[in-house]
Image (tube, rainbow, N blue to C red; front, top):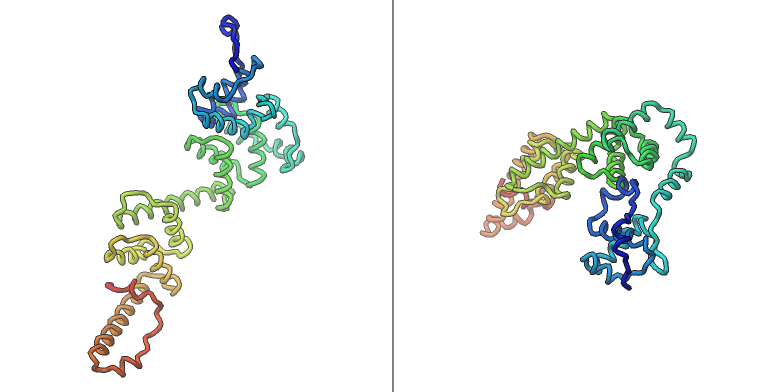
Length: 327
């Protein structure tokens, strides 16, 4: 159904958008969905019905984009779906309600205790000034209090959390929460913990670049390859000289990969080989064993010492013979 508009009325009228929208929703709402929201907000003043096809033509967006946009806006609580259509939610009322509704995840006593903490209050105010230009939405205050309670971060870590997300151009709650979860799983609570975490990550990145260079990769490591490097260095406590020994074994391979290298390093770890000397000694011993077996096989094939070969029982050194050929 078409909307009847009075040209003069449109000329002098305006559509209000609350400031809370610009702080809470605008930074992460997709552009096409923003068009849908703003136009629906504009239409709501006239209390008229409009079909999705008409909306699609008016905004020059596909029907699927309109439908996806409405779903997104509903999930973000910007709209509420009704049998007859949608209601545009009052963002200011929702914000006020969320601020003064008790949350089961933190008690009022905890909130009072947190409010009395001068160090914490100073940290929150610093976050407000550094990353929100002094106009941080009120809902962020209660969320930061909850994150202090949940993760036990000290003030420096909380500030570093916001700095990290800000530098990633991803200062919205879902991303901040995701990073906070990851830091918590790495047992980060103090700035010293965070510093060690970054040092470890930097070391892993440097090691990964070194491995890529030696393998002739002109790309960054994949997530799975990074997991391998972390296992070798953190779990196995192997340094680059030991990893180098495994890398050298790839020279005879057409397409060397991390699974091949991981098989070698895991075998050395399972054998409790901890130094380059121990590994080189093992490789030399394995080379001699392989040579003896091949000599016996040749002799047996010639029929010279068939009984001797038949009775020969090689030592158990796993089924990794092929990995230790061509040393």
